[in-house]
Length: 371
Image 1 (cartoon, rainbow, N blue to C red):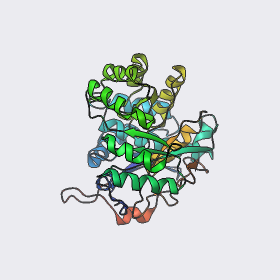
Image 2 (tube, helix red, strand yellow):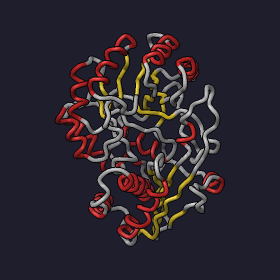
Image 3 (cartoon, rainbow, N blue to C red):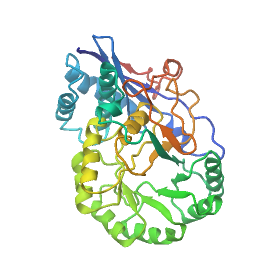
Image 4 (cartoon, rainbow, N blue to C red):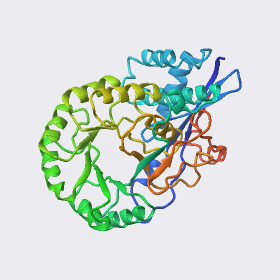
């Protein structure tokens, strides 16, 4: 079997309006689907990180990765991953090229599962947890009142763990008052502060019993500063969403920069690199709670990998709905749990209607489909 084509399809599927509204809904309307086609008629599907510059990621896939992989045996995933990493070394150890590699790698694992008629988690050793606990990852809201309303809504849907994306104490206080003492609250502040400022904020938030405090330091790779924060607070520090390599996670572990690791499967090189990071975390006795604010193959891939290790640490589950799902059968959470997709490969199919209706075009450019 040989790879005959690699496609990167940029989409812009808008979100349905939220109640209460969030200024973040516009940022989640970008998606990248990756397809790896073969001469055997099998096609693997993946997802690349798209919330920044999707056309640039698609260009990396077309100009850099496709020439490396077309004509290769798609089942030699470790070999192909090494080709991609080495082929983009000059500019690709972080950021756009790693997003592109991730999307292709996920598609290769989906293809391998289809070729062997097995789910991805079986290829990784089997599912320890076929049903996974998930937390509702909320958008950012404009006021504490809106935060409280959103939290009540997701608790009513059966979630017992919620993650906020606010940067103020008042919003966390409103959330805790809205849901009571038995719902777990996490807080992701998206890297705004110096270590000293983060320590002060961690102490101000202690009365609200956060399950974890996520990425409080700018820049996100200041692992020395994050280690200072981790030592200064009893609240667990979570990090890793913005790290792209196994070697970066090794530095996090060696510096003890946090208590919970959060690799993102669409940023670290896909399933191939993710499973190595998971082994590193296990050797360091640190839990993984994967970053996964995705709705398609990226979420499915995360669930397959997370199913293969034990423990009670939850997986991130995105809130909100697109006008048209880009999966034929959207992944659903029920009472705070998600079943790992069954079927060969990732166990998901792309909704062709979404591709036809919502092609992405920036600055008047034509819809982008690469072959």
